[in-house]
Length: 526
Image 1 (cartoon, rainbow, N blue to C red):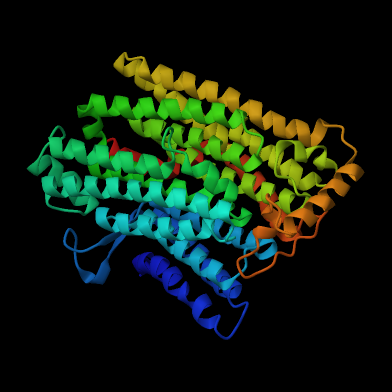
Image 2: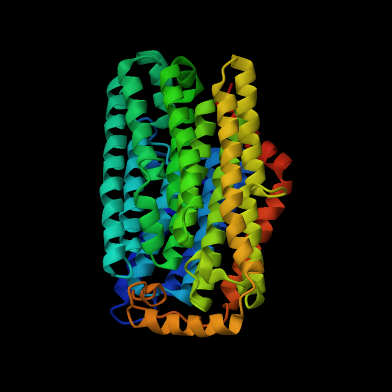
């Protein structure tokens, strides 16, 4: 019976997405309770699936009773269960944040539920074309959410993401077409078999298929130099939307890259195609360095951590290209950890922006005196992003670097050592911009009474539609935030502190991650 949870976890949020709009004809504020009940159900489903996978092993569900490869298959294994759980928990936590700071319109909650259903679909599907459908659901709802405040800047950011995301989806679909021509199937498990039986790992159709799919994911993950949609999207979206998108949307695409690379093409394909692996590692290395360097140069807080994501996802892609068991473990841990850290960081920034109008590094001056818990959580999450132990940020980077060095030792090449050196350099860059944030929070020596007067003036300006009217425009989607200037709302603050504690606590869970993910890693590296 547990397998029924897989289709229900996708279908229920998508069907529920129609309710806020439909019931909104009679009830103005029906969106949040519908979204809350649905998301709580999603959390319960994710927990049940995770318990079943990690205690009883992977399981699947054949949609409509049609067996694969003809029918569509949903699969829950150690990798997909971790991402499903991340999606459910972050979605629920974002709901708490949006309840206070907005957006709160029924249209927002419909898009939120549709996005949640699409993200769950990406994490559970075992079919290449079905994956494209769910990626499109995620993309289309993200475009709408980014533009939810209806400002010109957010519309431009959404349009840029729409164009880039559509190109990425098209490249992915072209790649799937090549794979289908070579293998005659779209079921992921069956493709991995048919590549061997009907083609080969060096078949030009198979190679072209992987190249197009990887290029499509590079656009959606936002690797350098095709990352340009991400800083604008993160900066211009309403704060609660940024929190959700930064934690989950590119994470879902990076998960899909891991899934397609190791479950469809397999590690033997990587071993047989040195040129493709080298190109993948080169793009990943450049993305790590460029994203980190660009983040250091930013003063806008949301853009700073957007560029940070370019670097962090570069590490995940590097872990994919290294094709080492330890490095892939690190890539998965870093994928989950980055989702958690970016949720916490953008949640903290949203609360400081709502309470004190802090949008730029200089706005944080001595804010730790007025908002000690939010500032402390932000500092802890920032240090975790740097990779300071004990934290999940340290675990992910450690495993990736260790796997890279071990791979270099096994093959006699220098690429692995280069990736480890790039990760070290990125860590120093990350320390530089996180230290700026912490220094302003704790050691700026600013008189907060003067700053509060400036903040009050800023709020007046933003709610009247000023050029940087984030606080006011962030709630323009049919609702209004309850954040009071000069205070931090209790409920989202508790969520933020919990995220910081979990980020540190998972730093002690290295052995646990190894145990839980060992069945998946042993299978793909068998």
